[in-house]
Image (cartoon, rainbow, N blue to C red; front, top):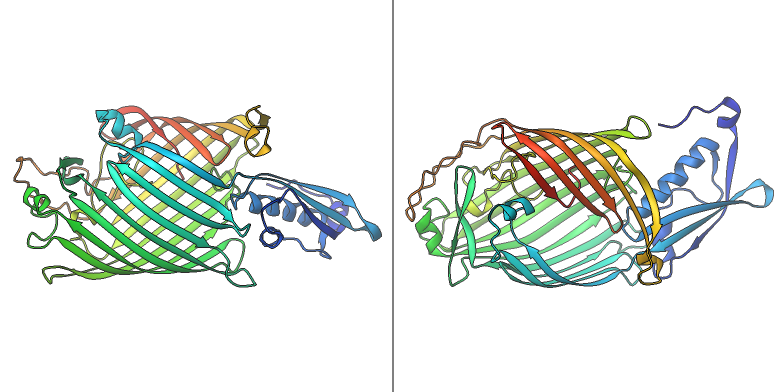
Length: 460
């Protein structure tokens, strides 16, 4: 919250003079000025002037182009105030070797420690290509989740910097896949041939009319090839007399992002909305279609200098409750899960998830130096630590499907479907540079089960 100002302070007018940039060796000036919400010649109250400077600094940090942004003010002629934005650019070209686990999360891998579920390969990320905030991603990954992916993001293709393009193409294929959910845990089968392959191609037209709002319209093609062995193991996996599904899809996406810091927000709010329509057919002529609405609304605020809180709701409404098994994902995938249930999955296309956090800033944000490379891009770091108390609620409303497994025979029950899930606990969040977050949490669920869980992103 902003401190109260006296009448004289609030009525004092600031006139913006010359705005200069320092440290943008690669980034084009027009990309930076797009994020700065003050202009030369603006006349602002002292409070509004300070707010706009801080908002401009946060906007630049949230582009992920810079590790640090500072703003110096000096007196200009005729009582104006000159601004100098000093930036430390990130390192933009990262050829990264890949050696990673492929489970849904780190905790499920720790449960069985299957070293066959390892991915390896290489990942090339070239951010801020040509200094225009463009991003090229090339992924070549072998191992458990074999994947080849090429994406190119053009954030601005018009002079006003409001329109952009995104292009994605990828192939993912697996020798081992989940074919059935038993007691809300996945059962896997491994074969010599590829059991499931996904081929994707899409193009999106993006519109960013303001700093905070973003719209996207995406069209694409998705093909799923699955081995007949999977339908032998579970006759509800997909149609048994087919082996691939061709889909065309269209997505309308909207985002309104007022978070002060995207990797680890303390103040602000965030909302998004995803409306997707899929239609196509299996190769036996059977048609498939689905429409779903997916949305997240989060809010964040400070209580005082140390304490803060956050709360959020995520929901998904799906028209088709008879999706094939590999598309019928509810809780336990990506970031949609109730904390304390990391070992479980809950299949279904319609669900509601609520999360709350109460945080105490144990270690205030600090800036330090490590003598590694001699470059500020790597040697100047920031770090902070937060104690976290949390509680989550969630439910998957879709009907538990009666999958029938023939090899081996199992009791295909899903007790967590249509059940209000409750999780709570405490944790420690470590935040550092290049948007890295480590969460270590001790959680309980409604079964009374508890454990330590590790995650590598913010909870909401």
